[in-house]
Length: 283
Image (cartoon, rainbow, N blue to C red; front, side, top):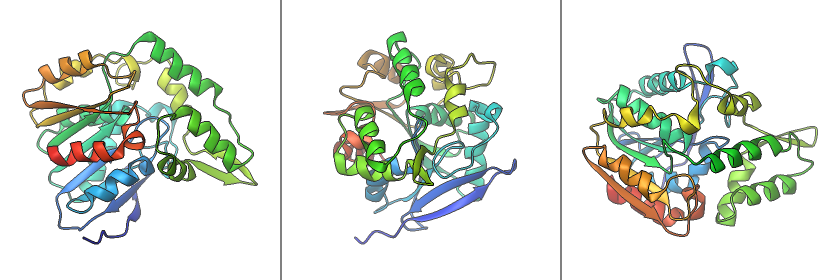
């Protein structure tokens, strides 16, 4: 089957923020929405989205503050806001129901959205995110965010940095992803992610904010989900352990677990072939 070309559009939210959405596949096909994680963008899904677009209308979303979406007021980087963003995007895309797939922070957003809007999510796929993360992992993530250079002198420096962050990735996929992860101005490269977003991620949270890494309220959200759910974890992942994945599945009425071999946290870059097979077999 010949896959349709990707189409990009900007959706203007009620607050005025522009959200980038990359779509592939036939307009009449069942819909999938893809949500990326922290410091990522829609292009981390390119290999997966291309395969899914044979049978689905696939919409990959740059969450606010990431990729080609607008940066926003730092106080708007909250779970409540992200859920509202997804609902506005759903309305704009005229979707009554869809399959929702989220990785890392995107998996957390997807979980909360499904709990709040159960009528719209036909199936849910949560990729390598956990309500409970070891303090050593949190410190590592925080350290990585703090030491990331603000500027890179050339693209090779960007790519070398990404290779260190994603050591298990397939290099051709990582290279393409890297090309979409930085902006170039006056021969200087900078990350497309709003620095204020990462600051918010690791700051003390108030009610309704991300507080991401240790927001255990997700357990209560899991109990509200009725949609068939697939939990995917990387076999080498330090983020989602087999024990926590099993606990998550036990709290859902209809859940499966798939372990991606030879993959860490970023299963889409590390082992896209097995990842897309797990997704297609489920949906």
